[in-house]
Length: 368
Image 1 (cartoon, rainbow, N blue to C red):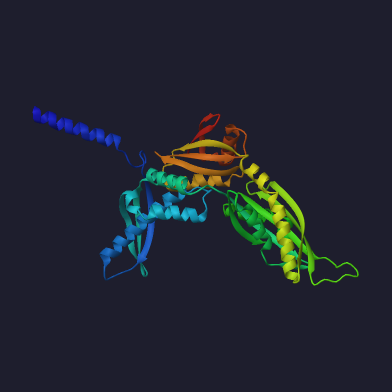
Image 2 (image 1 turned 90 degrees about the horizontal axis):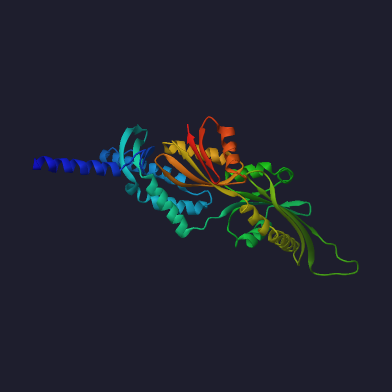
């Protein structure tokens, strides 16, 4: 009897441990499929196969890390965070098995199914961003510069805008030199900026012309006057959130330097007028907590993120947590109520979502 009780207690303890420690779709891990290609090495097949599996595991971890990287994180910052995660791949893989492996030309192909500790990766990334990086609003800066009748390929105006805005919480990205068509119809430029992750795009148009000397006077200096006009567009809805204009002169013995000085001064003066309205636009969006259940896989989670990214009313979103196949998002949107936000999502993607609950600041939906 004593031996029976001992065995029974041991079984109960084991059952309790199994109950409290769960992984997989119902716990804090998710199954992820991933692939890799490594050089074929007939001299050491065992090591080659091991390298292929390790590379596929790293790919699986990268997939998970990618869904947690904030859209407000710069490319350089995202790379640093992802490198931090993938350098410790083994620590985020609970188990994995090879589904397929074979020679593919001069390479060895491996496909695995791995259980990745999604919550652990999410926690590390959120902590890394919180500790090391300030979230910044991405702003794409584009311009057209004209000197007399000639289009200039210099970037004096962009550089002036950078000097003014570099102290602001923006991630400034260098955009294209624009044509007259871009100025008249900025929508293609705005669409491209959106695909590159920019929330706003600055469209600067500046022209500089030589000033004629006064009759009866002579001077070794050449004078130019530049007129700058700048519009700032929101990439989510094409709206103009800020506009400014300025005129400034430049003086120099060399005509091209005089033109550069005038362009820089006028663009700098105009850019100073943009700071307050851009910041107002950044802070105008409302924050909603959106939970989407029954996602089940990282691939489906990426589909959900693509859907949120496609809605122009949504300015930004961050994946706060992903566990038990449910994703919790913090969404910034130019929408007045959670009911309106839900309607925007369901109206366009009704086959994907079922609404479960709506409160004043939160929405809960099921991913069908």
